Image (cartoon, rainbow, N blue to C red; front, side, top):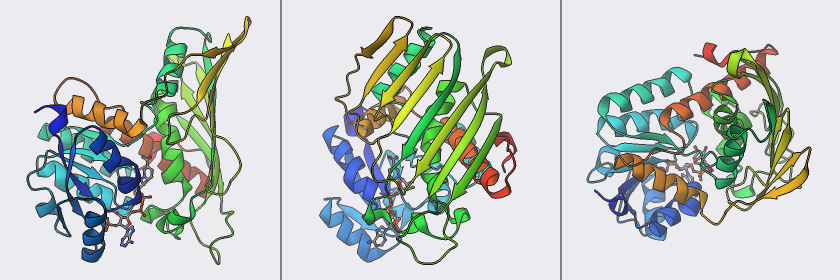
Length: 344
Ligand code: NDP
């Protein structure tokens, strides 16, 4: 199989599939072959609008005659759809969060491995040239000993997406933590060294679009403690929000001999830049940001399927990001620090 012949079942007739993934598939000559939705009429309209030949509500039928499944349904459905696709022998690229419990995301990783299929998470940031370059700068020693990182990821949720993300129940996959903090974790974990050992957080609901109380948090600040070589502590901070219309996103990486700032670091588009400040002054670091982030994910995924590469975020990376997000939720809810290894 060549990378240009991956045939996809789209599980979820979603905005991200329409706006990012189907265009990226077509740009790479992949074939979106079927779309599965919980609603027959929505499936039909979506398929017609995006020229997908087969559509319906039957998962098994959607998974017929394809190589891989791309899952972008609401968060509550990811686990069951990923499991079904893996058990049908399909490679799986699943939207974040992989599942709503750590146990379920770990199970997906184990089942994919046992079935010999590729499982990847559609975290678009770890493979971004900006983040790859930041990790390279750290690994090359340019900023000395790595001390920590700060992520500014406070944005405004577009009006068209103010639906299930704002519902009352975090257990049903709503809220900013599973949506955005999960992405931060996909960046911080490989940068700072695996899973953090301790997570603290405060989360609130700030938006004025929804009536009444009870919705899942739409703004959160976290503090995370990672361990570097010889147990050396590294600290990270994140600010994630659906409610901030006028800010840019940023990643700052702090070392004993320098600081890396990635400007526009957390967007869906690869535009952005990097500055490096050391004792010698501040310099712009050259990065080629022309490639589409979702094409990068798909190209790496196809490489993994054909045995010539690895996903930009593996199933295990996705499971680790879920653990961090769930630990943040628990820490915010209880007011206590949480070890991500302890979340069920
Ligand atoms: P949407 O709200 O657009 O779609 C999610 C689901 O809602 C669809 O799969 C569909 O359910 C249902 N739905 C949407 N519109 C209708 C409609 N008009 N009628 C009936 N049902 C409808 O979600 P997003 O695209 O924003 O997010 C989907 C997933 O992708 C989430 O898990 C999210 O976390 C992830 N995501 C990832 C991003 C990334 O950069 N990696 C960016 C944005 C989202 P059904 O499954 O039944 O078709």
